[in-house]
Amino acid sequence: MSTRLPSILALPLLRARSSRFSTRRISWGVRVLCGVLAVAWLLHAPALAAKQKAPTTDTVSGLVTDNAENGISGAAVTLKDLQTGKTVAIYTEANGQYQFSYLDPHHDYQIQASFKGVASETRQLSSLDTRRKLVINLTISTGQNKDQAVADKLATLLNWEPGSVVADIGAGEGRLTLAAAQRVGSTGHVFTTELDPKLLVNLQGLAARQKVDNITVIKAGEAQTNLPRECCDSIFMRHVYHHFTQPAQEDASLFQSLKPGGILAVIDFLPSQEASTLESSKEDVPNNRGGHGITKQALVDELSAAGFQVVTTPMDWPGEDYCVVFRKPSQ
Image (cartoon, rainbow, N blue to C red):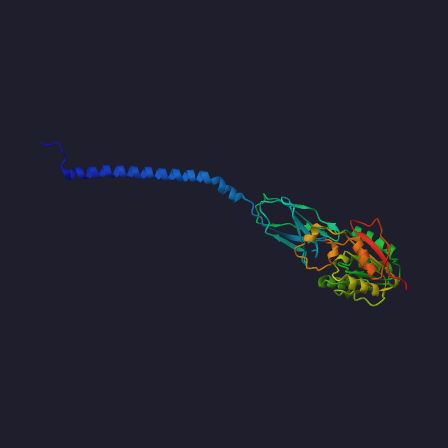
């Protein structure tokens, strides 16, 4: 009897061997594929992790407010790139809001706000911060003590006394207007002017809130004070003159608004080279400004051309401002 299996019995055995061989081949292929994928993941994992951790902050915005948390309109907000040294700046909107966009996510920055010669704290923006939109609010201490010191000096320089008629040009929030109104008393009068519509509305409610009746609010013109002719014993302005776009016309209007022998005090600050790069400034001021601000010499030259005579330049003015006092000739 033959020991060979019949072919019909051998076929299933051959198929079983072939199947085991194919399974081994598939299993080996899967192992190889998994190994390749594992190596690829190990090679690219650091890059993926770095990409996920890469800083993505490209916008910073916020509010600039005073101590009472009121938004400050027209504050200059400067942003300095600490890698390139480049500084850009913008003015805040009516509610004190600002925004910088398209920041380089790999750079560090410094941000600060300033208004009328007073600066906020300096804040840092780190490239390690992974937030895409950063909110940084800045507070400027507007300083009631400083206002009082300025008012005291103006009262002496401009001879404020009961019965005096005074004008505050570009009064802003009206703090110096109130100080003048208190000094000249009920027999005196203070004209307060403003070009900005929202600030004008605030000034119109100021007298009622403070219960004083010797203040008249006037909407200023682009090149005119809009004050009555020869109405004032003295006129003053703070951080306003450098905004004049038509100084010759505006200086002539100031001259006409003063009585003969009347006194003009201009408080301002020297130009800032950093702030000369303001992105959103729409002012068309003369080229002699040299940045955001005005030099004393440019101020004296322009007002002298209008007929004013320099009286004094106090050397101990509060803060970083300066003051120049002029007089309209008596004849």
